[in-house]
Length: 76
Image (cartoon, rainbow, N blue to C red; front, side, top):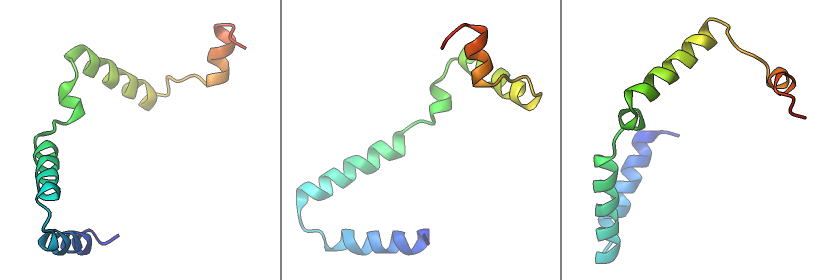
């Protein structure tokens, strides 16, 4: 998908809209999209540290196969 071409198509389409309610909905969408926060920023420091530790464990090879976890905790 050529994102630039898609943007131009959307601009052309918006220019043809005469329905005020559609314009209002698009405006609300734009405002919500513009003000949305990155999900990472909504996490606590403890949550961020836990995720970073998990990623480090993966990098270091400290992982266990799903079937081994099930065996270890006796799930069938």
